[in-house]
Length: 254
Image 1 (tube, helix red, strand yellow):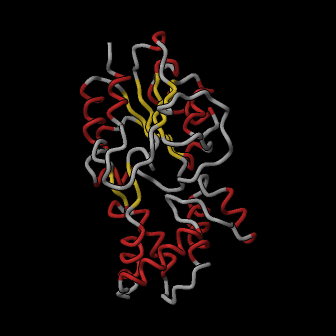
Image 2 (cartoon, one colour):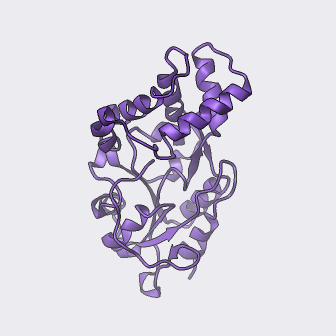
């Protein structure tokens, strides 16, 4: 999900990782961002085609592609950020990761700035973000989470988001690999606020200095201020590995 305020400055190497120092060993827990780290939203044209179909409209792929381009510029839940937020949506946009109504209102409002000529289209577009079919877990997500569980390393999902992720993970049969959920709309804090990372560590019962935060944005790197080590990975396209295997190199090495 789109990030909020700017995090503290951190020094990162060429591989964009803030690597844990030897004094932080062993890693007892890993915190994962959701969007761009464990899963990616569906391809934009498929998103538009599915939403239109839910409204009883069959679009040709050329029109769907053109609509997708316009909607991405307007701003999509799951990214990218809008080119411009209309003043009437400014308050909802500011609160989008703190309240479910604000999240829905902000993104349906942005979608409504694009005239698609389809009744109920903005709501149908938003509904895609709430269902497992609207997301694509990265191919390395399940094996990495499974390896951490087998090794006895605790796992939490830490996400700036305005809706419940648990049903998605249950549908993907990954929910049993997650020990805790620190979701901004439930915690009342958004990354990079150290409070959300500290809350996740508290849920897991682990010391931040024995915890690794894994994400894909500068907001995720805000975990440094909470005392965690941080690994920042590239945000890959749906279906492509995004380097999560590096987590095992850091968390499971002796």
